[in-house]
Length: 108
Image (cartoon, rainbow, N blue to C red; front, side):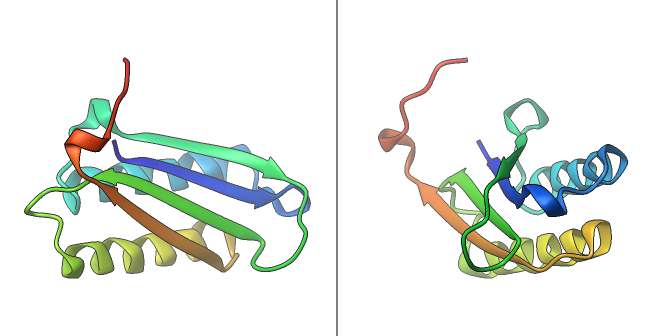
């Protein structure tokens, strides 16, 4: 963790080059702001059939840590929002969910 999943309206999906740049931004933010280990960062893009709302919905799942205070998460979300606009020109709804280590069961 963290896992950053972008749900993007299929008709607004940016070109691969832009997604690669946005992925780089996400990895940088996760490793610098959230202090995650590179091997634990995942960035995923999902084409969706859009119903209503923002053309991009971002879900960030991360492990709670003492260093990941509300101020740090706010800084992360602001920087992520700026990166999304810069790389795609789209406004996103961003939601972050922190989980305590004992509540996470995972493989690989």
